[in-house]
Image (tube, rainbow, N blue to C red; front, side, top):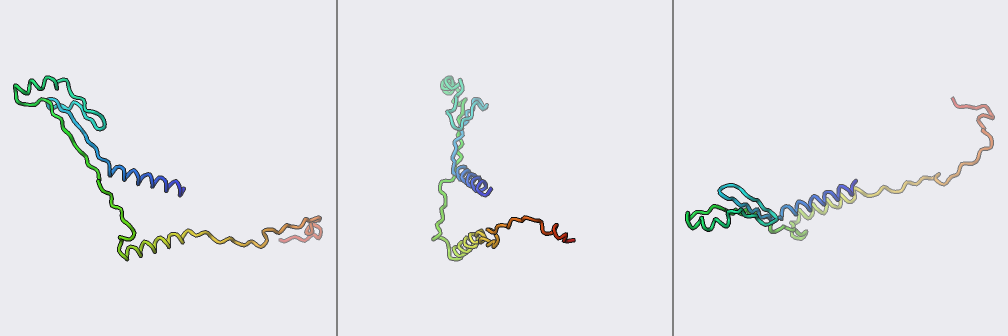
Length: 136
C-alpha cells in the first residue's frame, strides 16, 4: 500500500511539473468572421477562399481570411533549492524532522520466547481422568 501510494504521488508530481513547463501554440483560421479550423499540434488547414483572397484584397483593400495565433507559455525556469542555500533555522527544522521521522518507523526488537523450542512430553495416560480430578 505504501509503495503504491508513493509511486502514484511521484507520478502525479512528475505530471504536474510537465504540465507547468509545457508551452502550446493554438492557431485559429477565420474566414469572413467564421471560425474554420483550430490547430494545436498539426498544421492549420486554410479555407478555399485563400486563393481568391489575393485578388479580392487588391480590389477592396480588406482581408477576408484572418489567422490568429495564441501562445500559451509555460514556466521557463524551475527553482531548485539546495540544502546549503537555506538559512540555519530551516536547516535545523528539516534535519530534526527527518531524524524524528526516520526513528518513528524503527523496527520492534525481537521478542524472546523462552518456551519456543520446548516440546511437550507425550502422555500415555490421561492423569485427570485416571484420578477423577476435574477443575470446576
